[in-house]
Length: 364
Image 1 (cartoon, helix red, strand yellow):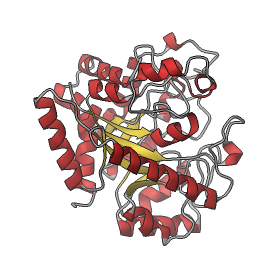
Image 2 (cartoon, rainbow, N blue to C red; image 1 turned 180 degrees about the vertical axis):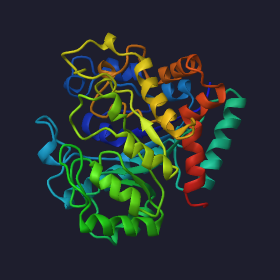
Image 3 (cartoon, rainbow, N blue to C red; image 1 turned 180 degrees about the horizontal axis):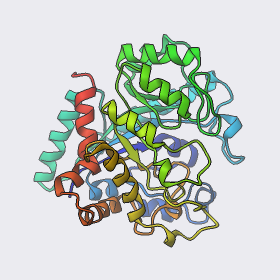
Image 4 (cartoon, rainbow, N blue to C red; image 1 turned 45 degrees about the vertical axis):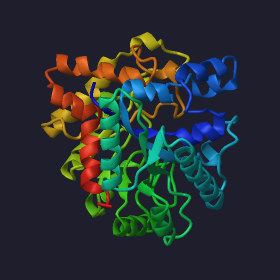
């Protein structure tokens, strides 16, 4: 099976919001959560360490994320009301990832450079050759930049291991975001300038399109969209969350990658949890979005998987063939049936992100 790189998982948010333990299996967590409010709010989990092994997950983009109070659900306790609270919570999550790695080095390892990525991939290859378990690599992605109180904070976050920043989730003082449209602000332009000086990868996911288009023109560093689908395949989806062909083309021209999301609401026009049948959506709908990006690119080198599993939705909102993250491997026969080669399928599941990080992370 090809290696999987998942470019978006809200692990720390789940651990702090719902008490989930990702050293356990999916099925242990589901059993423990039967009858709990967690299922109502976030759905059944799709993630667990044994399933990461079975799926041959090599690397996860692990987020620092918390919702602003104005967009939080009534049940959410883990939220922020101002940037100072955001910084406290994002530091809590960063500390949590460090503990997860320090206390379970056989399961998770944080990476910050191309060298540490190479080391852990070698470790994984050696373990698999011996039919042994291996640690999963984690790279830190800041989703929403409200936690940056001062531009000097960027040096601190870089030193703490953050390598990707998405300026928006909802709108921030830096730019418009999901459900809160708006361009880059003067602070947003300054943020991008200083991010580039440090070497941060810019994550365009959740940014409003005018802010994205200006960023494509002005950001001198590397960029990508870690978890977003194709707007042109969802003509009736009205929220500013998906990527137009114009934006996708701009990302491709900058040698970026788009991570597609196996979330039914982003895959089938009009699909809504609680009102639509999960059986209506197939992995083929996800492959439609992958193929759309490949057709624009003219190759299979600029698309990957950013599952966002457990990120506000669970099993109930994924294509009918998916039970856990292991089932992302079912993309391979679907891609082969569309004319993609084994090599191209492997690139889409993980190879493209690995190559991208090798090119764009600091060497050591």
